[in-house]
Length: 129
Image 1 (cartoon, rainbow, N blue to C red):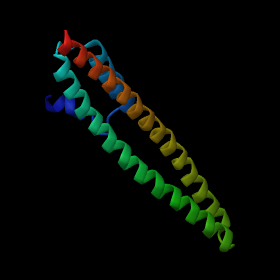
Image 2 (image 1 turned 90 degrees about the horizontal axis):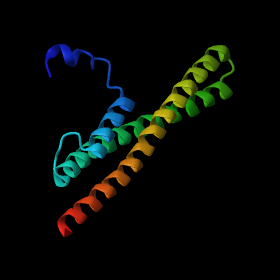
Image 3 (image 1 turned 30 degrees about the vertical axis):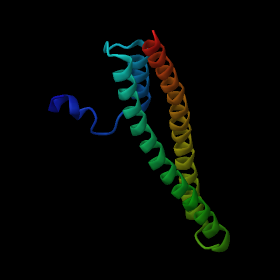
């Protein structure tokens, strides 16, 4: 990849596209790799996704704790409630997006486990024939 291509990732990777592209690559073997090589590549990408999921779990939990703390501040400190309410609302919206993304990552990891199992079965069938 040259520098120009890398610039499009300056603000992050579109995870949904990344997942879809990988699934198409693996399920249709667009690289014409052996099943063993394909499975090794899939397991490497699965490890990336598991790491991403773990980081998002930690961030989601920390954000949830911040929401709970902010609600506590709202309840026990009556002065400045309108500002605290806005802060709580903002954190809850952020938390909703974190839950949505984490849900996507969790389900994708589980789906990729099934793909790995399919690749394993193909590998065993190829070895036995």
